[in-house]
Amino acid sequence: MIKITRGTKDILEDEIPTWQWILDSAKNVFTKSNYVEIKTPIFEATELFQRGVGDSTDIVNKEMYTFCVGGADKTATSITLRPENTAGVVRAYIEHNLNRQSPPQKFWYFGPMFRYERPQAGRQRQFHQVGVEVFGCYEPIADAEVISCAVNFLKTLGLDDLTLELNSLGCKNCKNDYRESLKKALKPYLDDLCDDCKMRYEKNPLRILDCKNEDCQKIFMKPDIKDVIYNDYICDDCKSHFSELLGYLDELNIKYKINKLLVRGLDYYTRTVFEIKSESLGAQSALCGGGRYDGLVEMLGGAPTGAIGFAMGVERLYNLVKKIEKEKLDYFIVSNDPKHALVLANKLRLEGKSAEIDYQNRKFIKQLEKASKCAHRAIILGEDEIKGNFYSVKDLNSGVQEKIEDFRDLI
Ligand code: HAM
Image (tube, rainbow, N blue to C red):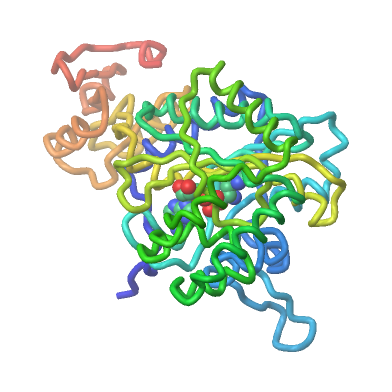
């Protein structure tokens, strides 16, 4: 027997109503803030992620599903299953000149993402994200609105016992200063850092702060390193951007925690980065991750464009929300006359009612058993009913049965 691939999951009947509810809620909340849906392909040119997400990140270095298509000759193209969707949305934004509409341009999306990570609770190789991206905005009010949109969505799902963590990584100028100061401070400890951090030291030193290795974390607590991390290295413009954002969040009554070690695992971020976490998720506690990426549109060939967004893991949301039961059908038709049953079910369905029939002509008792599991009412269509041109309708909750003569009374 061929089994499901490690790190992937079937989403079966019992789970679908809750998934559907999560997606309907996303659409509802995002549409109210004027977001429009965007659907981009699940695979893109590998280069998009190498340049967009950054080739020093774990995602690009270790986790991409990349393959060549078009033969082994020189015309072969390297494509990658998207590990995230910001790069794809930015590509679409540039390719379709979506900046023609007056800013901000606001998009939301839902879909599968693929990362070759070590599977564990809350971490899959194919998972789903729901997210938003806003373009054409440098103002901190956009950061606040995007964060409030994430918070509102989570509230709609009944989730409010969550922690919002925030940081500012600075702009392209001060971010570099910070990188250099951090490298200088970490240099004496280089030999004590884990192998991953040694590699990050050259390519992406800020990512070192995200390391979960206990020995590395002890190093971050050393006074000389802490000094660099907690020293407000960001420039005055970035400082006032961040403090305006905090002001808006206070106005919106959104609680936050500033976490100077929050650097995020993708290279494109500038200024604001944030995560929303839940203790109940265990080791994989991040439910939502996002931030500003003011340089990405330009880096991928578009005009300089301020932008910000977030994405949430839908499997992680699913694990936290209360589960929705499958809706029962309006009718189950209990009959030993398949033609009449099929025709009646079809008429009901065309009138917008949900209805099911029995394919196997089983005994009425068996059909009624099935009916009471999946429908609110049973329409009994026996010989008497067919001959007499009426329907016996049984309410499967109360057990009350009534005679209905006019089809219109069923709809
Ligand atoms: P990310 O932090 O890599 O950000 O992913 C966002 C969320 O996707 C995570 O917080 C988590 O809930 C979920 N997630 C990530 N990896 C997995 C996995 N292997 N299994 C299950 N869930 C997972 C991004 O992807 C950015 N594109 C977010 C963004 C949008 N930034 C700006 N705009």
